[in-house]
Image (cartoon, rainbow, N blue to C red):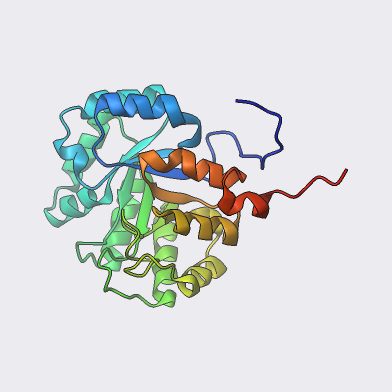
Length: 255
């Protein structure tokens, strides 16, 4: 990389701030290898979206690719929800062990999971795994009061979750966003007022959503559900190499 421009510093990996959490929507092993060769320095975590891991023929090869590049992976929370619904959490844990995956997502965006049972599930999985809890509904019509978001996030963190992912869906149309993708600014401000920003990952698949978070909370905000094709684009937003954030992050040198 050239070094003649002064850019905002990015902490080295493994990062605890400024995380870019990327969704793998079912890439082939070859596509995963190409992704890592291109953008590995900018990727902190790969989530194997939805239930794609369960049906992927190249899962183990793909996991080997990510592992070789030092990028941790986790299964989508949809699998955890279904395993819980069917009483198969022990089988899920055994499969994670077999795959060598030490991170897991616990969500309740589709399956109605009582909060106390979700907290207990987080506690159980956190005994031997790094747990990312997701809060928020996948139904764009579902509206949850800000105080309830805060309460559920606190419960997840207290139960042992390392970070909480704030729902936005893969297309940015639910949770912390309205169905048209508009940011629910009041909700997010309330969450950030009550919860340490570094303990949160905001799903933000759309570019205008990413810009909002960077402008509002800085380049070290944790963003998730980033499409593999948008990793470089997001990194340019984080360091002011795109028009949307250039003047926000850079000023003319008058010397």
